Image (cartoon, rainbow over all chains, first blue to last red; front, side, top):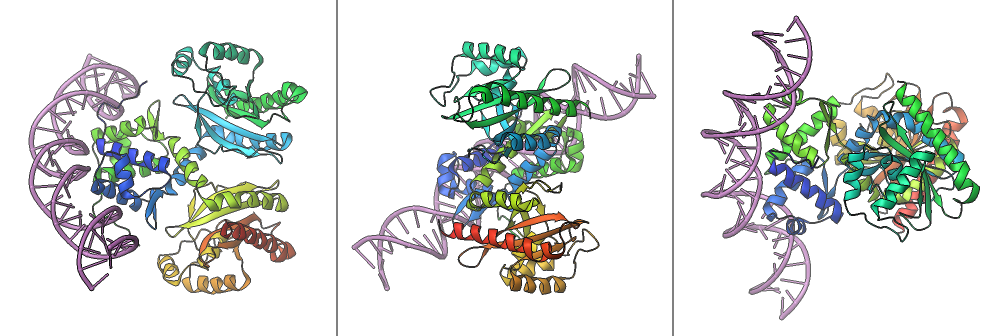
Length: 253
Length: 253
DNA sequence: CCAATCGTTCCGAGATACAGAACGGACATA
DNA sequence: TATGTCCGTTCTGTATCTCGGAACGATTGG
């Protein structure tokens, strides 16, 4: 679905591109933005002041940046998701049990999107935030979902060039496919420092009654603690069982 | 500041109104939206498919709803805030100490906006989510910030009709002003079931070196636990001291 | 089987977005 | 103080785009 709108609203596209640019630049002045987007100063000014009126951007002193309205809408979107409501308490208790960082993610447009996280008492400090989008192929969360996506979707995702984040990242589609088979076999996925040096994760998918994936949960921790018996049995056991509980609660309501 | 853009981009306004409506309706079909906003079906369709292309809305089966892109942007906005970074660990440990629900909020355009929350082991389950906007006058968070806002801002906020959420809500501007003086006096604010029956909160403001408010933190709990010595001394003590730590860390960096 | 309602496509006239010029303020340099 | 530069903002005309309304095929229900 290379989803191209047949009759796009070009003005809206310009606004959205302005928002994207503002996200990248963190904050910027009118002229700066006008250079990045292909628009004149006056046009950028008009767009920004319209966005400001609706609180989508904030003007602080002399620079514009994205406003808190996005946090509002984002929270609203997450709150509406059944998966989030059902999974949240389980995530919470999994974090307490393991003392590590626990994550909830969904697949969206071929990306792995973090929905929620809960930090156990020893949790590593990561850059992951709710809403963050990462590639599917180098996170345990992504791979666990990929393993249960319909073939045509997997193909489309693995056809894109696979980026490497660390020296352990897997960039060969065939190797990923082998892993996906293993994941289906044993029920959970591993990330062995593929996204971040020193970080290992264990993830299990959450499936619907019709076998389709609706999300995944994971436990992330430093290599020093994620090894041996704990990595091979204890954590996978806890993650799988939590995923199972969520799955049951989702399909029975 | 009734911030009216001088030369608004009307097309963008229509898009934003569509987003607002989509938030209200939770999810809706093309014709349904066309009725709510004053636009024809074709125009709504064009806007929606443009938004969908950028992942701002999702089309599920036969209804449109807001997409996860907002979560991404919202998380990004929050992550950029120094207050959030500095306050987060303090909020976390305050939640552990009190076992209750702890909140971080800022003031934005005359509203109280929740930025983050951490749940202690006994935390009440509330509808508050990151990004939620509430009135300033019937939350402890809001009042603690209001108490340190410049007079012209206070006036503008209290000039608007004050809504009541419960039978304890205060809707008389003069009574609020008396409370604000008390809050300045003792350093923290109380919400005695003013926003929600059965819920009491204690909040303390976080101020900049120039005395301006940059946010507030609060502890919320059920009336059954928030009373007597704990409500009058223990909790206020903990909240104020956490706010103080945050304040120091903010101004020294 | 027809009637109603849906989403989508198409088109042209009326609306409007926007480049570019012009302006005024802020700041630096001389 | 005078002069130059860069900023954000306002203004205006026209080339462009938006959007109502009509038309169409697909669904649904009576």
